[in-house]
Length: 186
Image (tube, rainbow, N blue to C red; front, side, top):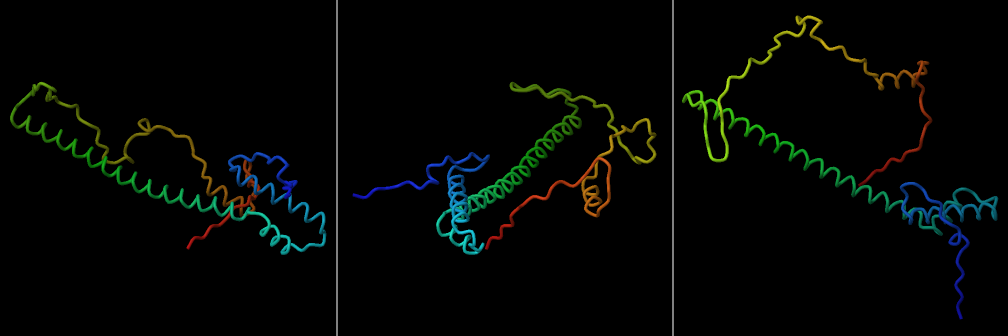
């Protein structure tokens, strides 16, 4: 008779981590448990041997690789959607321009033919005089009374550069450094 004994890591609850899939959380938990046990039982174990042992005994690296591959798929979808949105935006602008040209054409023909009103079963088009629009020829000559004051906008890039150069700026500091990853794909 074969008896199956669950590992102590499997019996411990997996702590929830925001945004982490249960599979990755379980692999992380198992990895951390095994690392803790190996370090306790073999205090002289060098980092390379520990890393190789953890890599061989857990599937954390594979789980992380799966997440990164999924990320690449998401980025491909993002790129495709951006391209599609741009194509649709250009198409929308074409339709808007075409609709405005048709409206202008009808207005021009109605003026030339002296047709003041076009009555149809599904719409009525009326010719009307539009008040003259504003044409600004030189903004520099427009008096200040016609300008709206605007609140100053913080130049975050310049502020960050000054702080990185070691300057002290009241009301701002650099945040704590954080870890990131670089991903290269073939």
